[in-house]
Image (cartoon, rainbow, N blue to C red; front, top):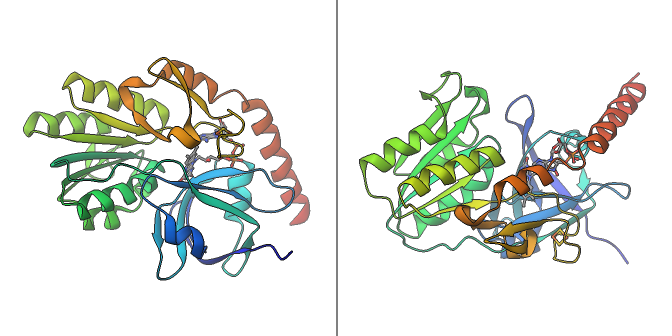
Length: 283
Ligand SMILES: Cc1cc2nc3c(=O)[nH]c(=O)nc-3n(C[C@H](O)[C@H](O)[C@H](O)COP(=O)(O)OP(=O)(O)OC[C@H]3O[C@@H](n4cnc5c(N)ncnc54)[C@H](O)[C@@H]3O)c2cc1C
Ligand code: FES
């Protein structure tokens, strides 16, 4: 049996550690909806990692993946060039975001989480919403996809921790200002766990409903193993099939954040081995 391979057709480095890939995957591109993700395996010895579908084009048969290098697999992926292939790509996975006309929506993206909010911004704008988008990052260099988000937003606010672009401060401060200024009907926050936890607190202070997208460690991504289990409103849910989007107020944040750290030692060792092998290989 000939296995399909997934060709990289465009590769852009967005910042020191962030990459933007366009990949030929016509079957996934036809079905992908905002909020969904894929699981990929680079080669036969690789592990499976989840990445959000940042954009898809059914006509071109391509999907866009934007990722940050944080460990071995993402470091290996970043080494691939245009014309090279990814062995396995499964998707689209997960429940899509509920796209409809809510009225005015506030969408917050932090760091590489901006890649995951972009399809939601686009979907909600096309569904007739007034869209206010907040993008937050540590420094100006890490504010990704600002042009794309701008195109589909009625208002775009940028915050950076060091003030190198836009407002100096955290996304929650920008959220407070918008919520105090005008009525908002629904909100989303996607980014580091701690950011989503605090965005949830901010939104709840104003009784504003908020959805977050959880990124627990995943293995199969199809509901078979429970590796991605999270506690939602006191019940066990599998983020890969029941999510990844959930109501922020229902997430058990402390449990979620502590479970994310469970393989840190193995992940650090794996990255160190890979970097050592790269040094030997490159002389
Ligand atoms: C549904 C979903 C969608 C995602 N979408 C994106 C995306 O669009 N772009 C992107 O850059 N990343 C995304 N992620 C995170 C991505 O899967 C991880 O960064 C990746 O698995 C890390 O693999 P690694 O081998 O490079 O690092 P590892 O060696 O596995 O991990 C290195 C470090 O990252 C932490 N880590 C491990 N897994 C995750 C995780 N799932 N999320 C956050 N931190 C993690 C570890 O605690 C460790 O400290 C998504 C995760 C999920 C569950
Ligand atoms: S990753 Fe196995 S059940 Fe979700």
